[in-house]
Length: 249
Image (cartoon, rainbow, N blue to C red; front, side):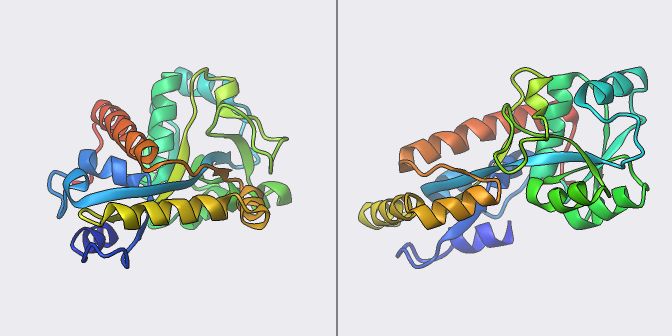
């Protein structure tokens, strides 16, 4: 929110650019008052890439598959909990949408960072953690955390052995996106130049390969497509967070 406000109030000359996560689309539903109006004060330049989150548990857990987790959660509503990097984080949004899609009740625990939540799962202090896939992979490979699944409809190229949650919960597909945002009023020619430059770089082999190796889907596209993504997710997140009774206050 601090970074977004700085960009919203910056000179619209193309020299201040915000690398925005999809929390931009969740904040209006989480906060009664924001120091900016995203639709009025900001302009999308280009969507860059999106990355699924991952749901991990302690290796001793009896719920090691998506089905086992859902069955356990339905049998004992509210007993399970999952930790994330905080309210409105990618992990939180992914978790709430998963709960809604699967029809289960799991309590959310807000941490000051995804790594802290992961370590509490390693210590077996909490049952579950929802955080970025690359963060969990080393712990998964070392056997300190068992990754139940990733928050997408299909498996990730960097972890083909890990099921997608969408394989068990039809229609579930969540990715944390990132894109460049500029102050509203930035000349269309400058926005077009940023868009074209980023799309060009995303199509170079080295950049694309490095992003894919970190579990990202490389996106790019037009400013209009990015605007549509923001509007769509703003509606989706508002509905999910309202039904879950979640706010940052």
